Image (cartoon, rainbow, N blue to C red; front, side, top):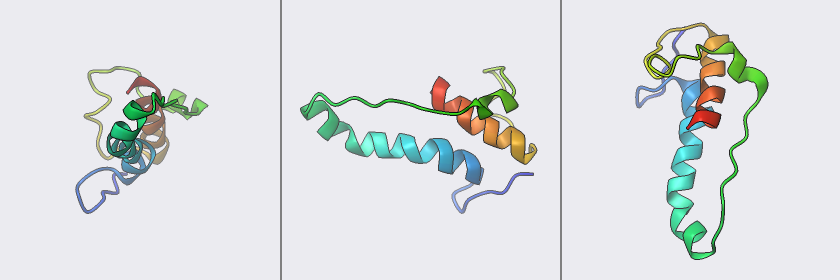
Length: 78
């Protein structure tokens, strides 16, 4: 279960979801200036996750498959 990064996030969620959000935020001025777009892609791995939006961000210490699935669900739901 729950392997955390030094800043306290599950490492799979940080790698698969939060890092993309950070990159988008940093690129936003360039994207807006050039009328760029961001396309979110994921995998069928999202099917390994709890589908309830009220608990999706609260899971901690779940199994590796669920954490991977949660990161993929966040990519398409975010």
